Length: 560
Image (tube, rainbow, N blue to C red; front, side):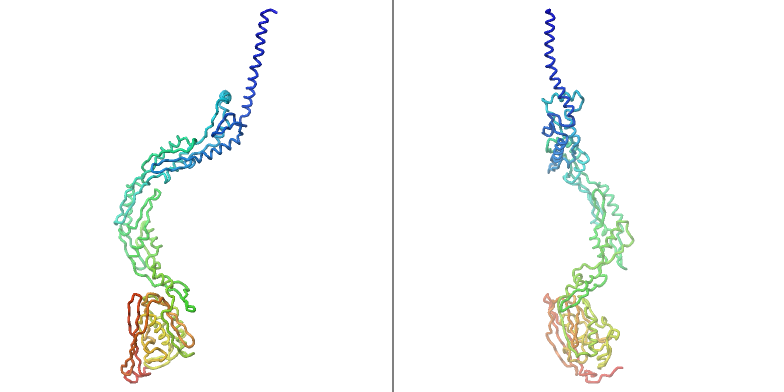
């Protein structure tokens, strides 16, 4: 074989050995690249790290779990804002950060894939030498952040809105004062630059003045409007009476204030009501008395009463205030309300009537006509509620004793002689009532003893009743209401007075003298009050020597 051919074959033989050695790695590389391309979307590429975790080989579902864990941790990241005087710490979510879950997951799944074939190939080739770290995807919502920074905990000193004062009689302005807050725009820019993903961050806030929502100039305009609105004062009416509040009196009750940036004008109804009530200070009616009963000595309230009406009802005061703010009215109509006076309230409740303070019993024969009259009058008076200061006239309250009312003819004294008339015999009830009032401490304003003494009554301490007179008139001068509660049986009548015991009463002396043939009795009653005060009054009675005979022993002419 020629030498040249031999050298050629030797050279060719060398290449035949080299080519396979080169082809094998290429084939392996091609197979690996083919596998890398084929695995895209099924598992995470090798040497990919997310949140400090090697994600290589994980399925997309498993990777999604890691992204969710990271999202939860990210949104809970503490963001501390240094306000200077204090610090406010919120979570990233509270301050407006939003974690972009899908974008972050896509970045993890597509790591070392995409961006063109050559770039992807180079990224793949460097797998053994360089770790690819996937960063969190997130964003800051500026509107959410601004809303949160507008809340009160980011105001260092709230502004003072302008105010109004009508105490001097003219509505004047109290100037507003700037507050101190934070520069929200600066803070949002700092938040946008902050590396929230790296962990808790702290940002220093810059301070800025916070002006009131209303200017002093606008406040002055409102003061002028209020002064004009109230310049004529108001005329109020309660029933047929009228009264007037001056402009200065009205203005001191006008309240103007700024609430949530809006003007609110109202009336201080408590103070306004007091001024209106001063126009009509008198009681406008009587106490509506309670209904009481006594069962086995125990006082029970059947129905509470109502305190006397006074000016002014809360509803009418509010209506007056609303009318005033709505443009005014020529005359403001007021209504009454039940008095809130504690004493009147207790009187209306009947709660102070709880025990016997005076009681007396007289006896009579059974089954006489006069007993019918005694019991009929007792029924009329039972339950009468006598409030302090009140006076009762028995002739006025009971009225004429007539058959229509249940009275019958019985013995009576008329013109100095015993006779029969409808309603006769009621003096026994009146005498029993007189003695109960005597020991109950009531004032005995008007009374008259029988002209002839009857042994069934206490000598000198009794009274009679007739139309048009004599009358029995009593006044409750005590501190508590008195309930008149008569009871009876076939042979006796008892009058019990229920109240709150606070006066000690006793008969301290009796003097009997003659005036001609008539006997004259004087009985001294002593009343001792809680404050130690002692009062003595004298009960007087005159008795003729007999039926139809005067004090001189002469026969009294009969009158037809």
